[in-house]
Amino acid sequence: MRIANLDGRLVLLQGDTALDVEDFSDGRFGASPQAVYDRWDEFVSWAAGSEIPSRGVRFDAARLGSPTPAPRQVIAVGLNYRDHATEAGFAIPDDLPPVFTKFVSAITGPNGTVTLPDGDVDWEIELAVVMGKMASRVHQDRAWAHVAGLTVAQDISERILQMSGPAPQFSLAKSHRGFLPLGPSVVTIDEFRDPDALRLTSSVNGETVQDGTTADLIFPVPQLIARLSAVIDLYPGDIILTGTPAGVGMGRTPPRYLRDGDVLISSIEHIGQMRQTFITPS
Image (cartoon, rainbow, N blue to C red; front, side, top):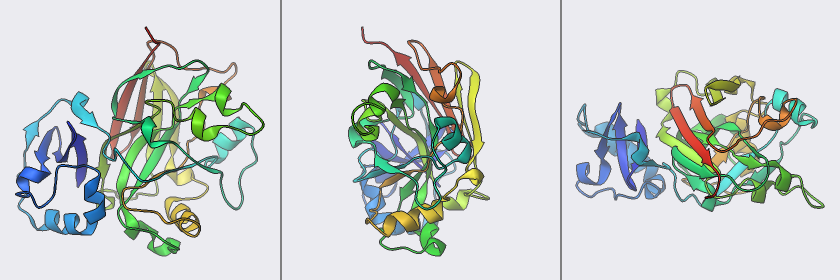
């Protein structure tokens, strides 16, 4: 099952068509894309037992918003690929990766424009986990049962602010407006042959700059959920950004950052792709 946000309304996606959930369920589920995660088990049972039409209404992908537009928490994990830790000049974490947040105001849809702030703006393709059940002290063997699905994320980052001050400003530097594109849909775990091994790529102006697989995560999704939920409660609809592979602009010689007119395409197999165009303020 693939769920999405079309013009601010919850829809089921079927290829290039969409089915409005509130209309199809006769009001049993509302239009809010975020609210469905609080009733996730009920929603999945309803969808499995309903005779869903094979085709919905065709739509323009530009109308898609974030499939999780207002999570309670966004938990971001750093240095979770060995090759990225190496290119960033940090030691490979052996117990717990660095954890920070991106503020919810940074969330945007899968396709659109991002206004470049002052500084050095970089790309980071990431697999995003969307929680479907509250997780508190969950063992990693049971972690996937708490997940609603997976989506594509870009952890866009401004590197000068990130590294400034007496301590790094990760959360603030990564939370400029538009710095957390999500989408195009949330794909449920049953749709994947192996949710622990998904290819993810980024390209800038048609040039592939990142090409990795989530099989190389130092801390795979179940382990992340277990370690995080040992400390904090994870709520339905929360997002976990699982880290980025090598190939970011900061790690290149010389460094390369996003400029006016650049087009960034972010893709994860079996989920889909996002497209952001970067502009300077007029």
